[in-house]
Image (tube, rainbow, N blue to C red; front, side):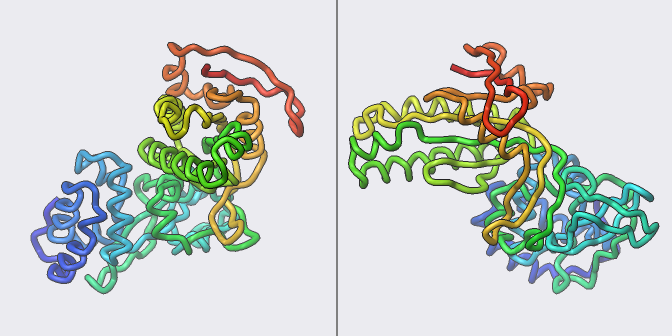
Length: 347
């Protein structure tokens, strides 16, 4: 949308910063669109940038637009604002950073007490950076659905570029649904004995690189590694399943290498459900029954198997990815969970 009356943006400074961000902007078309936005958008648009709307208008994937704006924000082209979308009055209030999102929040407009959820009532808007234009985010009531906070938080770019933006220690924020992806390098003890510590460490390091690339490609985020295991999260179950299938195929080729000689095999578990976003060991992490159960689902898998929980496959987009694959179903009693865990196993 073109604004004909001038928006007060310092274009020379904007373009200089955009040039510094070029190497990190994977999509050239996003770069062009960002410059068009600074040049032609109205002051009101620049104060309340909605990435859901921009993604549709630019005909670019929401993931690519989010990544582009996070890089641009790092280079001081934009500011990021967490918003409370009040469940009482349907209005929007600016919360600033993630550290200001708490388990209970009172709407300043209607005084309704909200239980914020990162995938439902906490949203994100962007604003042109204040030293590029005298335009500020005024926290006006949201008249449209903004980007879900979880769709920004659950990206490698947010994790790497906004490391300090996390819940306050001791605080927790609800996530209504998140998919957890756990892996374990099977037989690693035997691998250490077979290849020696140096050879085994090289395999562990290279397998991390393989996993990290595939997880990011499928729109997931690595939360942490535990020894030679990986914990990652996905906002969409189908993406986690797609990543697991790709990992399984890639590991077959990985194991054929002469320097590995079949010494590495992987076990994958996937589970979906509600959880809490927290700060643990000074970094963003997740806590709750869903996380524990996801780890148990992974423990059910034998080497080279993928175990997927019933809760994950209940999502409509998930089952079509596995229905033509060689699978079997089973119920397994696991420690710490009352009912047997129902899983579908990809052989």
